[in-house]
Image (spheres, rainbow, N blue to C red):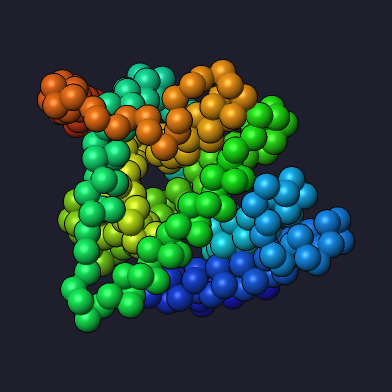
Length: 306
């Protein structure tokens, strides 16, 4: 018997509490299982201590990353809807194929937004906390650097098989799991109390960025979250933000692969630097045009009906 009393449609806070509880339970369970699998395959030392440059240690970390993301986002998102006796496809608005025109326009929206995402990252990196928060700032800088080194080590491969696995870990899983949780679940639940869709999108985007626990990537991820939120609102189809999320992450994975396979010579860390001002202006005008197109072509049906 499913505990439907936990999913009272009129009590969003109870729904959020239940969802977060599922996230914690599945995150611990899947992280533990992936850790055990990694230890059995690669041994305890390579699993518990990440060693940059060691292929086995990298493979162990990929297994752990896969388990962690499944347990934290995708599995609880699917299991929550199962417990509510709802259709997963209808709950997350993935029951219809995405509109081809909207897919194309969303593709260009992301590509045109990339220079602004890079600019926001540069601004974010220059932010300095007050002196009394210096210790926190130093901790954030160290954590950010460690996370960057691990990510770059995992993405730096010239092998196509590893590249494909990286796409699965860093693009496919986040696109599905995070969109189910943030746009699919949180926007729906927030809509019960927050009737202003713009405020809804902004608050969910703040959570989307903050819960990645990367302070120096907060602004660009906030911007991306807002773009994803509006794409969901305009299209009424979660496949659109899933596609853009996958594209955003997949581009990074692909550029690292192409660079390490010596198929391109531009360093991934320097691509987009020193963008001319006229590019920002042209892109901004094009983005305004795309936003206008979406606003005129948006699906007229209500996104949230509960």
